[in-house]
Image 1 (cartoon, rainbow over the protein chains, first blue to last red):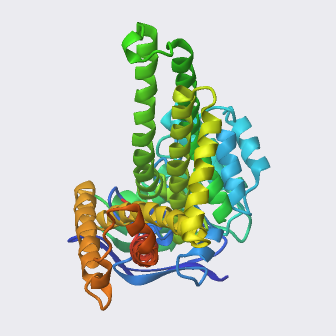
Image 2 (tube, each protein chain N blue to C red):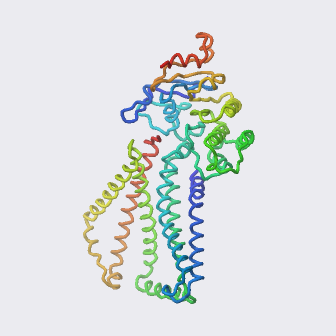
Image 3 (cartoon, rainbow over the protein chains, first blue to last red):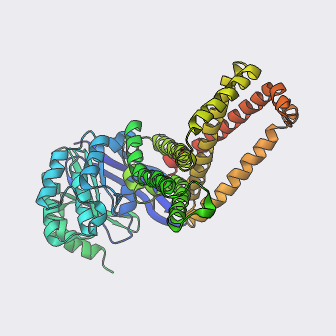
Amino acid sequence: MSTIFECTDLTKKFGSKVAVSGVNLKLERGQIVGLLGPNGSGKSTIIKLANELLTPTSGTILIGGKKPGIETKKIVSYLPERTYLNDWMRVHQIIEFFSDFYPDFKPKKAYDMLKSLKIDANDRLKTMSKGTKEKVQLILVMSREAELYLLDEPIGGVDPAARDYILQTILGNYNENATVIISTHLISDIENILDYVVFINQGKVVMTSSVDDIRAEKGKSVDGLFREVFKC
Amino acid sequence: MLSKLLKYELKATGRIFLPLFVALLMFAGITRFISPPMGPEKWAAPAMISMFVYICIMAGIFVMTFIMMIQRFNKNLLSDEGYLMFTLPVKAWKHIVSKLFVSMLWMITSGIVAFISVLIIALEKGDITKFTEAFATFYDQAFEQLGASIYFLSFEIIIGILVSLASGILIVYASIAIGHLINEHKMLASFGAFIILSTLSQFLFILISFIPGGAYFSNVNISSYNDFISMQWLIQTVMAYGIIFTGLLSAAFFAVTNLILSKRLNLE
């Protein structure tokens, strides 16, 4: 297995506030990784650093051996924790937009998923509820055949029924060599699809482990361990 | 990729500008149609209203070109939408260029459409022939006096207008980008950056007039048509200097904006 995601002494400060502090992390290809931690622990910051939306204060972050840039953006499919779609486009227009800019985008996949979630491709994004917009965004992100998917809180704002569909979508839409990193604090919902977990708190990596090891060695579920590690 | 960015930039802005242009031309036509040819003192209420709407749309268009220039840069690149734009596999300078070109395009088009709308309202029968005749005479006279350099002069004027437009837009982009570096009160910081950048460019402009030979330019003093003819070379040189200086300033604003967007991006 080769490394897809690697941080070395990664630090990010906002003024005097330290969001990510000396993180060292190495993730192999071909697995679904949970980036787990309480609110404000630095999960989103790490993902944004990987997308070059933030500049590190010090340290490096490498995607497939390269610093974030044009080349990494071609292979990374990113779902931000907020709505990044403008409100004037219709769904089919935003699909054209993605097809134009990402050679690995598969419009057919997107239309199939829209159909299953009963979203009309002619609807304007403006008229959609927040949850529907999140679904559209996830569909767009998962319709790419990327090497690395960075999903920041993908299930935070959608109802439980759609949540299941979304998790199935994530499972069903990535190939063997692709890697999925999911950041969330809703652990029990995604626990079953994870291969590997990274616990993060106050900007530091607290623990990394494969899910099998947690179950075998500690005899606990990831959710149980999380509650134990982050006990208030 | 630049052509694709331009395409989407045109779509995003065209949906605002094209209806405004159509409305302007329509109200120019309506005003023309319902107002008597006598003059404003005899206007009835409908004509007054239509004229008023026309003027409002006209003002709206020019305010809109200004707002759009700022909005498309600030909202599309540096707010939530930036999460999409900056994760596209596109270099930052292409984003700047696409926004700059489309902004310039709408400013120029707005000017042309406004001019056409004035013609629609004011043009009398036979005016076009009068205009072309007057222009032909003007051209003949100018050509007689200036010779072939009239082409060069026109070229210089056009380039001058384009470069000034670009520098006017780029100084705003650079200011917004600098404001983005500050953690709090970004708008205020951008405004401050704008004041500093414009003062700085004024200062540089004064400074270059002190370079050797610069003082000579202050001899340009046009009080009559003949002055203009006799000094045409000097005027052209001054203009060329102005264009080069403004061009260099634009390049500097562009470089600052590009540096911040590509190396110092910090989307909240």
